[in-house]
Length: 251
Image (cartoon, rainbow, N blue to C red):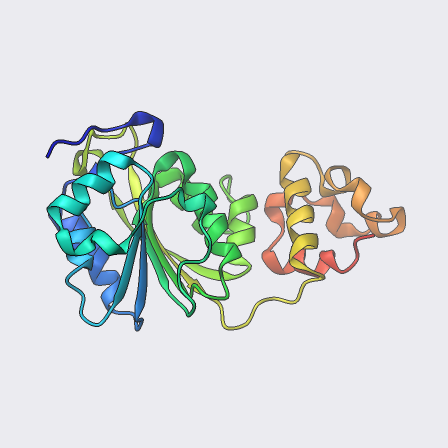
């Protein structure tokens, strides 16, 4: 059965078997019983994931053609496919599960934020992204790419940049390098006023990242608080702990 690539879905299919095996090896070092693959496409990773023993495996795929192709090529996957948009699905398991995928590039950041929402049930995520997105998620303070995603993901997960993946590993080759990262849920999360407060603060701070923090977040704090030295810094100079501490002082 033939299938077509769909640019509208951000599809770049992984064809390098050594990269597929390397990604699967990364999850085999983890302890888990439930696994969700996001965007299996033509099954490059799926064919290896289906061989894992004693694992409750499911895959989320929106594209009708890919669902038909996967069902035909790997008959025992049929009842394991969730034929929906990942961004709209409910949590697919009752207990903890790992998330893995060569994520569609056009929704990869939204996928990460959905995993952050599900953090109570997702201890590990291993995913492929455009390299610049992967670097952004993994970056530390005082970096040009340190931003909203870096803080809001790393507040809850340790992030490790695992390896680069070159364009020729895909069909069609994307115009950019890709990178694989691992998110590992933190045992202890830094104290914050609330997740909502942290999200509001971080987004306000980085939406005007070239400005002093004082000007970017003026509406969120009393003037006496804004006079403090930390507000003379720019957003990229603050650590996750700094943002979390400041969240308690918001109006």
